Length: 184
Image (cartoon, rainbow, N blue to C red; front, side):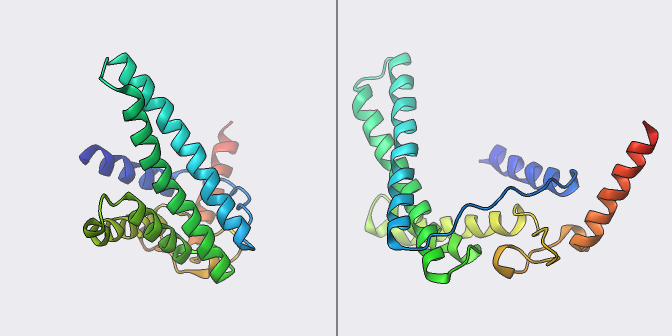
């Protein structure tokens, strides 16, 4: 767990100090219930399938008993969690008509519910998934490059790096690039 926390912190630091890259085009928003079902089913198939193959291969190599049963259980669990996240986020997009951190919260609720081992485990699982999702959306999602400095997707406020605005960070990056080109 400690290694994971260090990794996330390093990733956040690297994002904040690296040269800003143009953001990729966002995926299309879910516009009707078919998009929600498509997102959920495709993520279940992709992540569940990869988990199945990975676990089966690992179980065969380490000579564990019942590798296909282990692979099926792992594939179903990871597929359900991924399906919950993707389908929940798409449901949030359909409901809110935008893709913001609240759509991520809806996805985290469904992903957390799918990850719970029992009904009694659901509240703690959902809380953990939502809290972690909000941390990621707050600290690791870069500010929107579209003129709305300090705003994220959908206009949500984002925490700026060390109290500096997005415009200051971009201006520093441009000045640094100009200095590096002048040295060449």
